[in-house]
Image 1 (cartoon, rainbow, N blue to C red):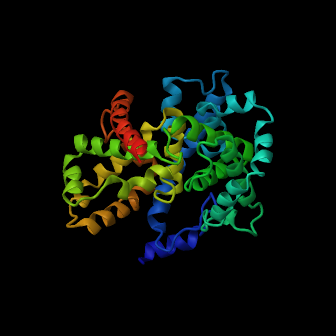
Image 2 (image 1 turned 120 degrees about the horizontal axis):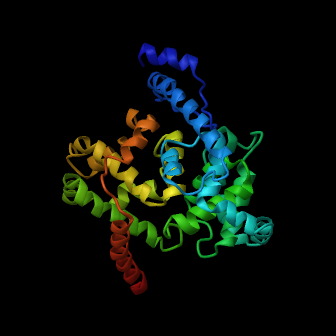
Image 3 (image 1 turned 90 degrees about the vertical axis):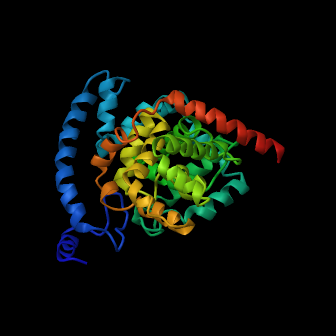
Length: 344
Protein backbone atom coordinates (compact mmCIF):
# COMPACT_ATOMS: atom_id res chain seq x y z
CA UNK A 1 0.00 0.00 0.00
CA UNK A 2 1.41 3.41 -0.93
CA UNK A 3 2.08 6.22 1.53
CA UNK A 4 -0.73 8.46 0.22
CA UNK A 5 -3.26 5.71 0.79
CA UNK A 6 -1.91 5.00 4.28
CA UNK A 7 -2.17 8.70 5.18
CA UNK A 8 -5.71 8.99 3.78
CA UNK A 9 -6.67 5.79 5.61
CA UNK A 10 -5.56 7.37 8.91
CA UNK A 11 -7.77 10.40 8.25
CA UNK A 12 -10.92 8.63 7.06
CA UNK A 13 -13.39 6.51 9.06
CA UNK A 14 -13.39 2.75 8.45
CA UNK A 15 -17.20 2.81 8.23
CA UNK A 16 -19.01 4.86 5.58
CA UNK A 17 -22.06 7.12 5.94
CA UNK A 18 -24.44 4.21 5.41
CA UNK A 19 -22.83 1.88 7.97
CA UNK A 20 -20.78 -0.27 5.57
CA UNK A 21 -17.29 -1.30 6.67
CA UNK A 22 -14.73 -0.30 4.08
CA UNK A 23 -12.96 -3.36 2.58
CA UNK A 24 -9.25 -4.01 3.13
CA UNK A 25 -8.45 -3.07 -0.50
CA UNK A 26 -10.35 0.25 -0.30
CA UNK A 27 -8.49 3.04 -2.13
CA UNK A 28 -8.60 5.72 0.55
CA UNK A 29 -6.34 8.15 -1.34
CA UNK A 30 -8.48 8.17 -4.49
CA UNK A 31 -11.71 8.35 -2.51
CA UNK A 32 -10.46 11.29 -0.44
CA UNK A 33 -9.48 13.16 -3.61
CA UNK A 34 -12.81 12.32 -5.29
CA UNK A 35 -14.92 13.18 -2.25
CA UNK A 36 -13.26 16.56 -1.73
CA UNK A 37 -14.44 17.47 -5.25
CA UNK A 38 -17.81 15.75 -4.91
CA UNK A 39 -18.56 17.57 -1.65
CA UNK A 40 -18.60 20.84 -3.61
CA UNK A 41 -21.15 19.29 -6.00
CA UNK A 42 -23.25 17.93 -3.12
CA UNK A 43 -23.36 21.32 -1.41
CA UNK A 44 -24.46 23.03 -4.62
CA UNK A 45 -27.08 20.35 -5.36
CA UNK A 46 -28.44 20.53 -1.80
CA UNK A 47 -29.05 24.27 -2.18
CA UNK A 48 -30.80 23.80 -5.52
CA UNK A 49 -32.96 20.95 -4.20
CA UNK A 50 -33.98 22.93 -1.12
CA UNK A 51 -35.17 25.75 -3.39
CA UNK A 52 -37.00 23.31 -5.69
CA UNK A 53 -38.83 21.56 -2.86
CA UNK A 54 -40.05 24.86 -1.45
CA UNK A 55 -42.17 25.36 -4.58
CA UNK A 56 -45.70 24.00 -4.71
CA UNK A 57 -44.91 22.07 -7.91
CA UNK A 58 -42.03 20.32 -6.08
CA UNK A 59 -41.12 17.12 -7.87
CA UNK A 60 -43.92 17.10 -10.42
CA UNK A 61 -42.81 15.62 -13.75
CA UNK A 62 -40.73 18.12 -15.71
CA UNK A 63 -37.45 18.36 -17.60
CA UNK A 64 -36.02 20.35 -14.71
CA UNK A 65 -36.85 17.61 -12.18
CA UNK A 66 -35.41 14.97 -14.54
CA UNK A 67 -32.19 16.98 -14.84
CA UNK A 68 -32.00 17.48 -11.08
CA UNK A 69 -32.49 13.78 -10.40
CA UNK A 70 -29.84 12.77 -12.93
CA UNK A 71 -27.40 15.08 -11.15
CA UNK A 72 -28.18 13.38 -7.84
CA UNK A 73 -30.64 13.73 -4.97
CA UNK A 74 -29.08 14.90 -1.69
CA UNK A 75 -29.34 12.15 0.90
CA UNK A 76 -31.50 14.26 3.22
CA UNK A 77 -34.15 14.50 0.47
CA UNK A 78 -33.76 11.02 -1.06
CA UNK A 79 -36.52 9.21 0.83
CA UNK A 80 -39.06 11.96 0.12
CA UNK A 81 -38.18 12.28 -3.58
CA UNK A 82 -38.16 8.51 -4.16
CA UNK A 83 -41.58 8.25 -2.51
CA UNK A 84 -42.99 11.04 -4.66
CA UNK A 85 -41.58 10.20 -8.11
CA UNK A 86 -42.21 6.44 -7.80
CA UNK A 87 -45.86 6.82 -6.81
CA UNK A 88 -45.16 5.12 -3.47
CA UNK A 89 -46.33 8.13 -1.47
CA UNK A 90 -49.67 8.24 -3.29
CA UNK A 91 -50.23 4.51 -2.77
CA UNK A 92 -49.35 4.74 0.93
CA UNK A 93 -51.81 7.60 1.42
CA UNK A 94 -54.57 5.75 -0.47
CA UNK A 95 -54.02 2.63 1.66
CA UNK A 96 -53.74 3.99 5.20
CA UNK A 97 -53.27 1.17 7.72
CA UNK A 98 -52.78 -1.44 5.00
CA UNK A 99 -49.10 -2.10 5.75
CA UNK A 100 -49.70 -3.02 9.38
CA UNK A 101 -52.66 -5.27 8.54
CA UNK A 102 -50.75 -7.16 5.84
CA UNK A 103 -47.76 -7.53 8.19
CA UNK A 104 -49.98 -9.17 10.85
CA UNK A 105 -51.48 -11.53 8.26
CA UNK A 106 -48.06 -12.32 6.81
CA UNK A 107 -46.72 -13.43 10.20
CA UNK A 108 -49.24 -16.32 10.09
CA UNK A 109 -47.61 -17.73 6.94
CA UNK A 110 -44.95 -20.01 8.43
CA UNK A 111 -43.42 -20.94 5.07
CA UNK A 112 -42.96 -17.27 4.11
CA UNK A 113 -41.56 -16.33 7.52
CA UNK A 114 -39.08 -19.23 7.42
CA UNK A 115 -37.85 -18.19 3.96
CA UNK A 116 -37.29 -14.62 5.16
CA UNK A 117 -35.60 -15.64 8.43
CA UNK A 118 -33.20 -17.94 6.55
CA UNK A 119 -31.76 -14.96 4.66
CA UNK A 120 -31.83 -12.32 7.40
CA UNK A 121 -28.37 -12.98 8.82
CA UNK A 122 -26.90 -13.17 5.30
CA UNK A 123 -27.96 -9.60 4.62
CA UNK A 124 -25.09 -7.11 4.74
CA UNK A 125 -22.75 -8.79 7.24
CA UNK A 126 -20.44 -5.84 6.46
CA UNK A 127 -22.95 -3.23 7.67
CA UNK A 128 -23.05 -2.25 11.34
CA UNK A 129 -26.79 -1.42 11.16
CA UNK A 130 -27.61 -5.08 10.43
CA UNK A 131 -25.62 -6.55 13.33
CA UNK A 132 -27.71 -8.16 16.07
CA UNK A 133 -26.32 -5.89 18.79
CA UNK A 134 -26.68 -2.67 16.73
CA UNK A 135 -28.70 0.22 18.07
CA UNK A 136 -30.88 0.74 16.19
CA UNK A 137 -30.81 -2.70 14.57
CA UNK A 138 -32.50 -2.93 11.17
CA UNK A 139 -32.85 -6.73 11.13
CA UNK A 140 -36.37 -6.71 12.62
CA UNK A 141 -37.41 -3.90 10.28
CA UNK A 142 -36.05 -5.93 7.35
CA UNK A 143 -37.93 -9.00 8.57
CA UNK A 144 -41.18 -7.07 8.85
CA UNK A 145 -41.00 -5.45 5.42
CA UNK A 146 -40.15 -8.72 3.65
CA UNK A 147 -42.88 -10.69 5.41
CA UNK A 148 -45.46 -7.97 4.74
CA UNK A 149 -44.47 -7.71 1.09
CA UNK A 150 -44.44 -11.48 0.61
CA UNK A 151 -48.01 -11.63 1.86
CA UNK A 152 -49.04 -8.54 -0.12
CA UNK A 153 -47.65 -9.91 -3.39
CA UNK A 154 -48.36 -13.64 -3.25
CA UNK A 155 -47.19 -14.17 -6.85
CA UNK A 156 -43.68 -13.18 -5.79
CA UNK A 157 -43.71 -14.12 -2.10
CA UNK A 158 -40.07 -13.92 -1.08
CA UNK A 159 -37.12 -14.30 -3.45
CA UNK A 160 -33.39 -14.13 -2.73
CA UNK A 161 -32.09 -10.70 -3.67
CA UNK A 162 -35.12 -8.91 -2.26
CA UNK A 163 -33.44 -8.81 1.16
CA UNK A 164 -30.56 -6.70 -0.19
CA UNK A 165 -32.85 -4.31 -2.07
CA UNK A 166 -35.09 -3.91 0.98
CA UNK A 167 -32.04 -3.36 3.19
CA UNK A 168 -30.98 -0.40 1.02
CA UNK A 169 -34.51 1.00 1.09
CA UNK A 170 -34.50 0.81 4.90
CA UNK A 171 -31.11 2.55 5.09
CA UNK A 172 -32.54 5.47 3.11
CA UNK A 173 -36.19 5.57 4.25
CA UNK A 174 -35.42 4.70 7.90
CA UNK A 175 -39.08 3.75 8.16
CA UNK A 176 -40.52 0.31 7.48
CA UNK A 177 -43.83 1.46 6.02
CA UNK A 178 -42.11 3.76 3.51
CA UNK A 179 -39.60 0.99 2.70
CA UNK A 180 -42.55 -1.36 2.05
CA UNK A 181 -44.20 1.02 -0.43
CA UNK A 182 -40.90 1.74 -2.18
CA UNK A 183 -40.35 -2.02 -2.53
CA UNK A 184 -43.86 -2.29 -3.95
CA UNK A 185 -43.03 0.45 -6.48
CA UNK A 186 -39.86 -1.36 -7.58
CA UNK A 187 -41.18 -4.90 -7.78
CA UNK A 188 -44.77 -4.16 -8.66
CA UNK A 189 -44.30 -1.44 -11.27
CA UNK A 190 -40.71 -0.48 -12.16
CA UNK A 191 -39.04 -3.87 -12.64
CA UNK A 192 -40.75 -6.17 -15.16
CA UNK A 193 -41.35 -9.49 -13.38
CA UNK A 194 -37.85 -10.03 -11.99
CA UNK A 195 -38.83 -11.87 -8.81
CA UNK A 196 -41.80 -14.16 -9.54
CA UNK A 197 -40.75 -17.85 -9.43
CA UNK A 198 -40.11 -18.31 -13.21
CA UNK A 199 -38.13 -14.99 -13.21
CA UNK A 200 -39.13 -14.46 -16.83
CA UNK A 201 -38.63 -10.71 -16.63
CA UNK A 202 -35.10 -11.15 -15.29
CA UNK A 203 -34.19 -13.73 -17.95
CA UNK A 204 -35.72 -11.54 -20.63
CA UNK A 205 -33.78 -8.42 -19.67
CA UNK A 206 -30.47 -10.30 -19.64
CA UNK A 207 -31.14 -11.37 -23.23
CA UNK A 208 -32.20 -7.82 -24.11
CA UNK A 209 -28.84 -6.62 -22.81
CA UNK A 210 -27.16 -9.21 -25.02
CA UNK A 211 -28.96 -7.80 -28.08
CA UNK A 212 -28.05 -4.24 -27.11
CA UNK A 213 -24.38 -5.19 -26.69
CA UNK A 214 -24.50 -6.90 -30.10
CA UNK A 215 -25.66 -3.67 -31.74
CA UNK A 216 -23.62 -1.19 -29.70
CA UNK A 217 -20.45 -3.09 -28.67
CA UNK A 218 -20.31 -5.95 -31.21
CA UNK A 219 -16.73 -7.02 -30.44
CA UNK A 220 -17.72 -7.91 -26.86
CA UNK A 221 -20.81 -9.78 -28.08
CA UNK A 222 -18.59 -11.78 -30.46
CA UNK A 223 -16.19 -12.57 -27.60
CA UNK A 224 -19.05 -13.82 -25.41
CA UNK A 225 -20.34 -16.04 -28.20
CA UNK A 226 -16.88 -17.34 -29.08
CA UNK A 227 -16.25 -18.52 -25.52
CA UNK A 228 -19.77 -19.87 -24.98
CA UNK A 229 -20.46 -17.38 -22.21
CA UNK A 230 -24.13 -16.59 -21.53
CA UNK A 231 -25.16 -13.18 -20.24
CA UNK A 232 -26.88 -14.68 -17.22
CA UNK A 233 -23.49 -15.90 -15.94
CA UNK A 234 -22.00 -12.42 -15.80
CA UNK A 235 -24.86 -9.97 -15.23
CA UNK A 236 -27.63 -11.82 -13.36
CA UNK A 237 -26.59 -10.27 -10.04
CA UNK A 238 -26.41 -6.79 -11.59
CA UNK A 239 -30.10 -7.07 -12.52
CA UNK A 240 -31.38 -9.11 -9.58
CA UNK A 241 -29.80 -6.93 -6.87
CA UNK A 242 -29.84 -3.69 -8.87
CA UNK A 243 -26.03 -3.38 -8.59
CA UNK A 244 -25.92 -3.82 -4.79
CA UNK A 245 -22.68 -5.55 -3.71
CA UNK A 246 -21.46 -4.92 -7.26
CA UNK A 247 -20.95 -1.15 -7.32
CA UNK A 248 -20.10 1.27 -4.47
CA UNK A 249 -23.08 2.27 -2.34
CA UNK A 250 -23.19 5.95 -3.35
CA UNK A 251 -23.05 4.95 -7.03
CA UNK A 252 -25.91 2.49 -6.49
CA UNK A 253 -28.01 5.20 -4.82
CA UNK A 254 -27.36 7.61 -7.69
CA UNK A 255 -28.51 4.87 -10.10
CA UNK A 256 -31.62 4.29 -8.00
CA UNK A 257 -32.41 8.03 -8.05
CA UNK A 258 -32.89 7.67 -11.81
CA UNK A 259 -34.44 4.20 -11.60
CA UNK A 260 -37.31 5.43 -9.43
CA UNK A 261 -37.94 8.33 -11.79
CA UNK A 262 -37.18 6.98 -15.28
CA UNK A 263 -37.78 3.27 -14.89
CA UNK A 264 -35.91 0.08 -15.68
CA UNK A 265 -34.14 1.25 -18.86
CA UNK A 266 -31.61 2.87 -16.49
CA UNK A 267 -30.33 -0.64 -15.68
CA UNK A 268 -29.40 -1.14 -19.34
CA UNK A 269 -27.65 2.24 -19.46
CA UNK A 270 -25.50 1.29 -16.45
CA UNK A 271 -24.68 -2.18 -17.80
CA UNK A 272 -23.79 -0.87 -21.28
CA UNK A 273 -21.58 1.86 -19.80
CA UNK A 274 -19.66 -0.64 -17.65
CA UNK A 275 -19.06 -2.81 -20.71
CA UNK A 276 -18.27 0.02 -23.14
CA UNK A 277 -15.86 1.77 -20.76
CA UNK A 278 -14.01 -1.52 -20.27
CA UNK A 279 -14.28 -2.90 -23.80
CA UNK A 280 -10.53 -3.13 -24.45
CA UNK A 281 -9.97 -4.81 -21.07
CA UNK A 282 -12.75 -7.36 -21.64
CA UNK A 283 -11.42 -8.16 -25.12
CA UNK A 284 -8.11 -9.27 -23.56
CA UNK A 285 -9.91 -12.39 -22.26
CA UNK A 286 -8.43 -15.59 -23.68
CA UNK A 287 -10.95 -18.15 -22.38
CA UNK A 288 -14.20 -18.74 -20.46
CA UNK A 289 -12.77 -18.15 -16.93
CA UNK A 290 -11.00 -15.03 -18.22
CA UNK A 291 -14.27 -13.51 -19.40
CA UNK A 292 -15.89 -14.22 -16.05
CA UNK A 293 -12.98 -12.63 -14.21
CA UNK A 294 -12.99 -9.52 -16.42
CA UNK A 295 -16.66 -8.91 -15.67
CA UNK A 296 -16.04 -9.15 -11.94
CA UNK A 297 -13.17 -6.64 -12.15
CA UNK A 298 -14.98 -3.96 -14.20
CA UNK A 299 -17.38 -3.20 -11.34
CA UNK A 300 -14.52 -2.01 -9.12
CA UNK A 301 -12.06 0.86 -9.22
CA UNK A 302 -11.98 4.57 -9.90
CA UNK A 303 -14.53 4.68 -12.74
CA UNK A 304 -17.39 3.46 -10.55
CA UNK A 305 -16.19 5.14 -7.35
CA UNK A 306 -16.53 8.58 -8.93
CA UNK A 307 -20.32 8.30 -8.96
CA UNK A 308 -20.86 11.79 -10.36
CA UNK A 309 -18.69 11.21 -13.44
CA UNK A 310 -20.03 7.68 -13.89
CA UNK A 311 -23.63 8.93 -13.91
CA UNK A 312 -22.75 11.47 -16.58
CA UNK A 313 -21.33 8.64 -18.68
CA UNK A 314 -24.42 6.42 -18.48
CA UNK A 315 -26.39 9.10 -20.33
CA UNK A 316 -23.77 9.59 -23.06
CA UNK A 317 -21.80 6.35 -23.59
CA UNK A 318 -24.63 4.00 -24.64
CA UNK A 319 -26.05 6.56 -27.08
CA UNK A 320 -29.74 6.48 -27.96
CA UNK A 321 -31.73 3.94 -25.98
CA UNK A 322 -35.46 4.33 -26.51
CA UNK A 323 -38.18 2.69 -24.47
CA UNK A 324 -39.69 1.49 -27.78
CA UNK A 325 -36.50 -0.40 -28.69
CA UNK A 326 -36.32 -2.04 -25.25
CA UNK A 327 -40.00 -3.02 -25.33
CA UNK A 328 -39.66 -4.63 -28.78
CA UNK A 329 -36.66 -6.66 -27.62
CA UNK A 330 -38.50 -7.62 -24.44
CA UNK A 331 -41.49 -8.85 -26.42
CA UNK A 332 -39.22 -11.01 -28.60
CA UNK A 333 -37.41 -12.72 -25.72
CA UNK A 334 -40.31 -12.83 -23.27
CA UNK A 335 -42.46 -14.82 -25.70
CA UNK A 336 -39.65 -17.38 -26.08
CA UNK A 337 -39.32 -17.82 -22.30
CA UNK A 338 -43.09 -18.07 -21.86
CA UNK A 339 -43.19 -20.89 -24.43
CA UNK A 340 -40.29 -22.67 -22.68
CA UNK A 341 -41.97 -22.26 -19.29
CA UNK A 342 -45.29 -23.55 -20.67
CA UNK A 343 -43.62 -26.64 -22.20
CA UNK A 344 -41.92 -27.68 -18.93
